[in-house]
Each structure stands twice: as structure tokens, then as C-alpha cells.
Image (cartoon, rainbow, N blue to C red):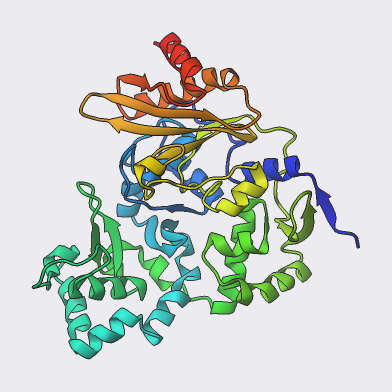
Length: 400
């Protein structure tokens, strides 16, 4: 049977529909139901501590829901609907899927993390002591500080942090974020998660990997083997035979995408919309663009975050958000929230090659105005950097 062939434009529309960009933004009050719908499309929300604009995990919700209460994620976490775990990096995940990750937790207990091994050798019983300490109430790592010498690099965790991280990775502790400073608060799972979530039987590794691959296909719509394994940070070599099984079972549909060197897989329930009319500023860690190779294949969008690039060597700016318009990434904006002065700063605004800057300025201005209002910033200041800046400054002025 011949493999179905998708045009690149069709693959883009499928991918964006899978991520919720064919769903209209709510027009009324946004609440927990809308969070659930968005999370159902994305599967997880990557966490990042950079706060130059807003915490990165808030941006995927804004991209899909528009203005919403900024307490949605922490409130859902406090109620046990979300939990944090290492999935696609540190991530917020629905607690309903925790049983698909318990094999990772069990493995962490059986094959201890190297930091845990060295800690056990150096301080026998210390990890267990820390776990017993959790029984008295939630703690942050600073309360277990053990370092006596000067602090080394920022990766140089003290013994208390290492113990807590081992308990976290092995599922013996949960973590949520302190609202004041974003620090991890560690606690016992039975105080963080509903009893029915903790009671669900662990899925064996092989079956869990298959379920995660199917979920990745649902969230991507269409993707290569590398795309599917990257979503939940699975090992490609282990998953290759599992994908073949899923094809045999009819849970994945093999397709080819014009211009892609590798075979692709379509979720059987993937939507294939005739058009996508999206407009959104995307976090650098949004699932649409977090896989830089996939973003290049889908959108011809070469994207590298420049936070760690020395300022003189930056091309586009410090914290650059891709601008999605229709079914294309048409520009990139370096944004910053100047909270002291109540301003959203557009430090640079660039159009992608082949995009006439003036054609995207009005839509971008509308999106920036919505973002500024959501962040309670009264003013938008456009710096004269980038080919979109002149038209954008005029469009922003017209929205005042």
C-alpha cells in the first residue's frame, strides 16, 4: 500500500491544528476548563526560569488563550491537577498521565543517579534523613544548605539539593514552585497529588514508551521518529521498533512530507484544516518551536535562542519570540517587560526573508497590545532596530 504524501503546507496546518491554533481564543472569562483544553493540545508545558518578559511557561497559554489569570498553572498545581517532572526538560504535566512516567521514577530508585551514588557513599543515610524531614512539611533546598566553602559554578548543588532532586526524580517527592521567587518547594506525593492518581498502577516501560509516542504524535499531528521521541525525551534507538509496532496496530499512519528526508507519522485522528488563521507570539520553549530542527523543516525558520550569546554577537536579541501569523512564522521580536516603568519594550522587530515588514505590523501591534494589557503594562515602546520597527511603531501608535 503506497504511503500517503503530504505537502509541506498541509503538514504545517496539521501541526498547528494539533497544538490548538485552530481553536478560537475564549471571548469571555478564562478558567480551568480552558487550561485543560490547552494542555490537552500541548500535553505538557516546559518550565523555564527566565523572567525578562514573563515566565516562559505562561506564554504558551497566552498564545492559545489570550489574556488569562496568571494563577491558572499554580492553582491547578496546588489542586493536584498538574505535577512537575523531567519530561521535555522540567515540565508541567497533567496528573492524569503520571502513571506513564512512574517507570522512570522506579528506574531512578533501582539505578541511582550518579549524584545520589556519590552522596550515599559520602553520607550514608542522608537521603533517607531528608525524606523523613519532608514528613514534617514542605521544604526548599535552602533549608538543607550544607555547603561550607565558597559556592562554585551554578551547577554546583549542595548535598541537600542533591538529596531532594534524587527524591524528586525517583518519585519519592513532588515539587511545585513558590510563587514569590519560583524556587522549588519539595513535598511528599501524598500531600500534592490525589489518592487516585497515586493509586494508578505503573505502566511497564515498554508500554509506557508506546503510549508516550502516540501522545507525541497527537500533539505534533505529524512528525518524524526524531520529532516523536524528542517530545518526551525518549531514546530514538529504543523507540524505533515501537513505532513500527504502532504502525502495525494502526495507531500511527506512515506518511511522507515534501522536503523531509525522513519518513513521518501521522496521528490517525489528526485534523487537516483547509486553513489556519493563527496570530501568536511564541515562547522560545513553545512545543511549536522547541525542536529547532523541526521548526526549520516545517517553517523554514532557523531559530537559536541568544540568551547565552555575548551581546555583541547577538543577531536578533536577548529574548526573541517567533511571530506566528496564519500558518507561517513571519517574524521575530526581542521583547522585555520594563515593570518599573510600566512598559512593554520591543527591543528589535525583524521580518523573515520574503515577508514584507509592513504587512505584519498591524497584526503584531494588536498582539503586543493584548500582551501589554495582560501583563498590566500601560505602554509599548518600539526601539528603532529591525526592519519591522518603523511600521510597527506607527501601528502601535494607532492602537493608543
